[in-house]
Length: 162
Length: 134
Image (cartoon, rainbow over all chains, first blue to last red; front, side, top):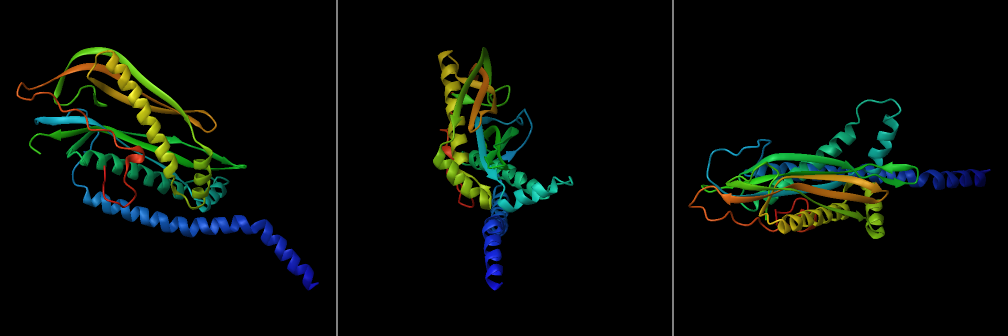
């Protein structure tokens, strides 16, 4: 009898072990990485005082030294836990908060990269900033892992008087 | 070649419009990157391999657009737009388009607007948390 029980547990572990382990790894490592990323974004956003992104199309009336196109892009993917949770949530509908933060992180990262590129050349402003988001779906068996590419681009402007 | 996604180049005047220029490229991901991305998908976060791939391809599309503009005798491209579409499973088309123009600097004392800085490498360089290094 005891042998049977052990065998049952073994087969249960074999069947459910991998997905459960992946979800746990996804939850803990994913949460840790997300926290790190958000902290890094907050730090870099606070440190960045130039290259202000705007959606204006005309620069202010000041002498301009140079202007050029700047881009920043990132591909960001959901973790196993978030995907699992999101799949469950689609049964009842409603907000998918975990995926909202994911896309938001991608936008902020892309925007930050664009600003860093502009700031490297001493640009004070980035005009006409556009964001483009496209889905890159990877099929993994039946489930698909959501991942998005975010591209931010705009025209960086360097003023003569700095 | 100066690029801008405005209708004009700030600090310069457009003297001639030469028409629409475009550049495209279709890239497929390779299996090594795909496997790495698959592993990364467990914990989520940035898929550096894909970021790099797409940035590389976008630069390729831009440089084709620039080539076309150069062959028309333009020295700038205004109103640059990007579009991405997936063609088949695992391949994406990156498309860049804009209007080729001839510009001249606004003020007489300004010689020529300096050339646009070189495009940074794939993935826009800096790792997360690192100092901006372009």
